Length: 268
Ligand code: DGL
Image (cartoon, rainbow, N blue to C red; front, side, top):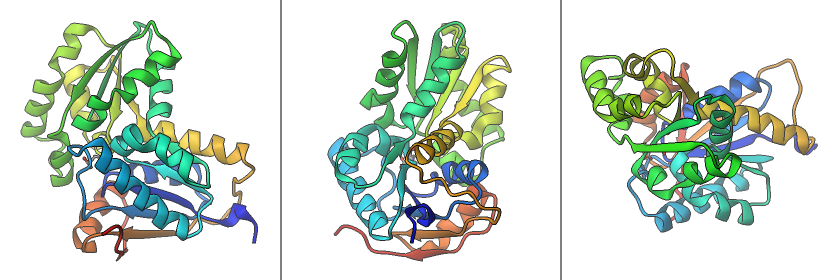
């Protein structure tokens, strides 16, 4: 069997990575995908670097045991803390969400003032800051952790008054700082795009790390001659580490399609 026909493996701390998977299915509709949501141990955004690395390696081990050709780290917190470890330990190419989002933002900003929002862990890690500075040291980066956006997105409260007031409290300072580009550095934030735009105005460009990552996945697959070109749609398998029920009903909203997931046990 050719390596090309193997699935892409994607993991996230839970449901959020489905936004990344959705973008990948849009850009690469013929690819098979195995998705793992670590729903028993979510959230990663408030956990220490050591813990996130441990969980990420265990997730990667499960996915590589399924036989994958490429690993996507959909979770921003896991990408921020564990990408280096993963890349050195996993035998297939590994794509994270930080660098694609950072490089898209640098390519788009005109004022060279870029905002980045994410979980506490992602912001504390400095990973987006470093990735942006590495591409263009002149870009000024404004960072802000927005932890309440995660439960709002899962609750479906993305367009109501609570979401608007929360977004205003978090994002107001960006307007004074004069950013023209904002990186949505968390799997859940694309669901709040409309509300974020209402607060920041139409002129601020929102960078969806999920979208940027899907182009990077296509580039890496092409580079490794692993791209699958066929006219039929790929098949998808979903695994979770806690009861599938919540993942399935909340996940259907994140993925815009019904989902059937299977329970697996990972770590100890
Ligand atoms: N998936 C996480 C991220 O993108 C958000 C949820 C969590 O904290 O685990 O950082």
